Image (cartoon, chains in turn brown, red):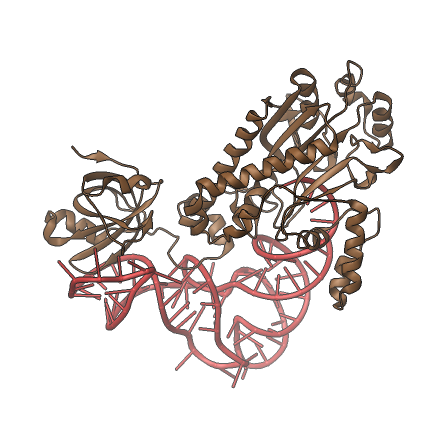
Length: 445
RNA sequence: UCCACAAUAGCUCAAUGGCAGAGCAAUCGGCUGUUAACCGAUGGGUUCCUGGUUCGAGUCCAGGUUGUGGAGCCA
């Protein structure tokens, strides 16, 4: 009886005859001996075709197989340290080989390619080992996020993608024609989360969000996925503890499940193993102090210019990078200036210039992966904030209702999935963290 | 939107203002242990577009297009 196997489990079948169905990743031609690197989506294995051991017509197929041709192979599994693969160390001695299709002119070769070419061929690039590994880690991270929230007693409550009004700023919204009425793609589920929080206590939403920002950087996507929890009776300090637990859990899960993938992408796992509880916590004003000290200690005038910051302004990318490089673990920066943050953030008692917000900056220069805050729960304070930002109060009638019927102190945050994946995988750009990146200049394929 | 850089074979890149080139991929041949194999052969070009300077432009100039890196904004 021939077992149909997933290549990731090949170690269980040494000495047995198995069938694998997949695609040719690469082939090395040695004449009467052919090494066929086969992938099946779960792993890769070296299949060896000897002319003498096969039907002549089937060996001829093996001898001429092209990259990404589809094949079904049966053969015997043996352990061999020389054999590459995922996992490595096993190979299949081919007995029969059936061709599905002989692929012609597959564009992605085993050599180097440029970014634009690879992104144009993203639908095929996904088959490459490195991309395969990254997206498997992404899946682990998504599951870890959801498992952690579920285990902490949060309920998944979905928020709408089509919305009637802005969550934050109208300039970054994608507008739709909703049967003749304007509508927008959601930039955040947060306002709905607050309604759901009052119904279920602890909730989260997880889904795609859309921002029409003209941002062209290594950390921005037009369409990105966000985990957004919202908790009743929650302080900023409670929120930081939750975020710390979540991030540690995510990293632990990736380390537990994706060691082979981390090795394939050559991630320094010691940096991930250092992600344990005890994240640093500094206020915005302390962060500004540190940046000023760093700038003063720098002799490079260009670096000094980059690190220059006016107290009360938001951090730029160089500031975040510099801050994260001061710490070997993620760092919380709390109490940002109110004027650089969203209208719904609770002012600090006795210091309305600062708000009860907190960003979590990932180490190694990655910067913000989570942003959160206590929300304003007083009806009149919220109305005055809306008016101060010239937002149409009438659009927020239902949101203001939440402050009229049993309002409570509450808090929540949003964690960017792709930035988290980029950090954990050690990637220089978020475009490889999502199967089909939507960027300022790209919506194909 | 701003700043910098780039665009040459399917891909990655060379080419002092003077014959358009290499490696890989493809095709054909050789090889029983390859790890991005190796060896031999073959085919492959609107040098991003428009205009200009010049005896002569892939190369210099002007404008445009596209891309990459960075800034701003944010998760």
